[in-house]
Length: 132
Image (cartoon, rainbow, N blue to C red; front, side, top):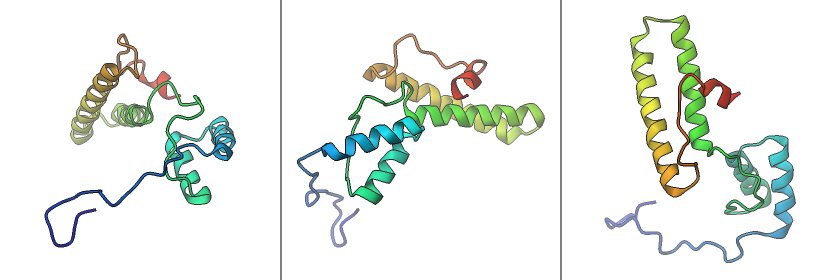
């Protein structure tokens, strides 16, 4: 949050707790992951009900495809399905181009970081199998 009487946007007053993984939370994370909750849903539940500030990948139950990339692919599949029914929808066609370019950019980032394998490639024809 920005400062009231200056130009800075510093975070010098905030401090992350020293203990990053309380042992009682690991079981809760495993239980929620096996139920099928996404990582962001697990984080919201832990923040609201257990008071845990940050939990990185603790248990190894993280999905193989990052959540933000998965949601973009899911959105692209939904727009493509809409375009099959409504061929003249020019705005949706344009938005699909934007969504897919965002997918390619994010995939390029995850390949350089090492989250995705270097041979992974997004193809619109096989995207519906990834989502389902």
